[in-house]
Image 1 (cartoon, one colour):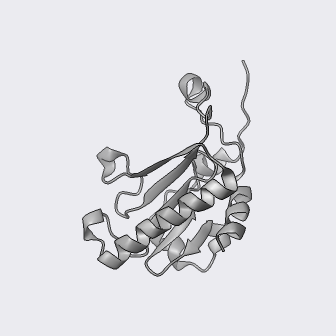
Image 2 (tube, one colour):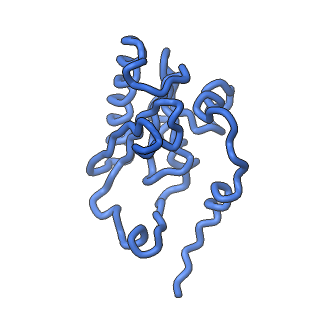
Length: 158
């Protein structure tokens, strides 16, 4: 039997369960590099997903703790989707993906891991990035370390 060593996953498996909202917590701290916050705008911020589906998996979230898209103000929603647009351009330039998955999971039944704080996922996709690992072993292979992706994107976004 082959073994896939992924020692960084132990942090995810053994981490203490979060209390409170992780997106609110991270956005209030003054530790953008540690928290992988790439960019801050007036109403929203861009953060790398700490447990990504692919390199460059970003999330855009409002600072305001809000669960429903329809409850965003006009300024918040305009800013939010301007950051989606900015993120797509950034990822295309820096990582050159073949496509993207963009989505909001609203509610636990829809797959929201943080259902109380609205956020949009942007997942870069490459031709052939879906291999046999998820099917055979329920394992996803991420080809780049999170800190390396952060440094690459942070320099470009500023």
